[in-house]
Amino acid sequence: MRSAADHEVIVVLAESQPYFKELEDAMKIRRYVKSKNVAQLPEMIQSIIRNRQNQASAHEKRAEELISAAIAEGRVYVAGDKLTLKMTSVKERMEKAMGILVESI
Image (cartoon, rainbow, N blue to C red):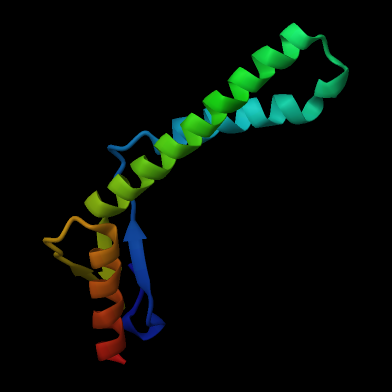
């Protein structure tokens, strides 16, 4: 990793969480919708697109949950040193890592 002089917190996300697939699926839907003039399409097609947009929102929500899990399971480095953090809350992990960083400066 980096040297202690960098004074930074690095979180390496756990690879066990498929958040990237969820984001990719949502982006594909959003890109398709953006490429079409939905208002000029038949009502049935507009309804299908609305349903797909709802699916994209669900993919984004799921990705957010998976990213939180990946952070909770991930490796944390502070000023180049790997930390062993027992807490699983993302907020607690980040607060602890930032606290250690501030104390080390």
